[in-house]
Length: 103
Image (cartoon, rainbow, N blue to C red; front, side):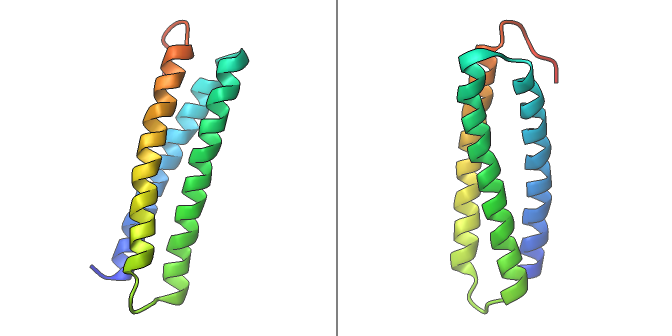
């Protein structure tokens, strides 16, 4: 796989993640108190991961290194970390919601 194809694929994944984070933020807005504060930190972490992945993709595009596997590894690791953090966050939202939150 060449670097441009990889970058396009990651950008598509990031777009999907941004939509998920938007939905999670909407659900968070319906919560109150300590639960909301705790979950807000998790969402902040997720936004940081997305930003870091965007930066790495931009780095690949601009620098176009001949050996780009280290950056690919960073992006792949961040993706795994993001998935785990997202699942944890959604579990916290589910536990904090007194009734099912639509969306």
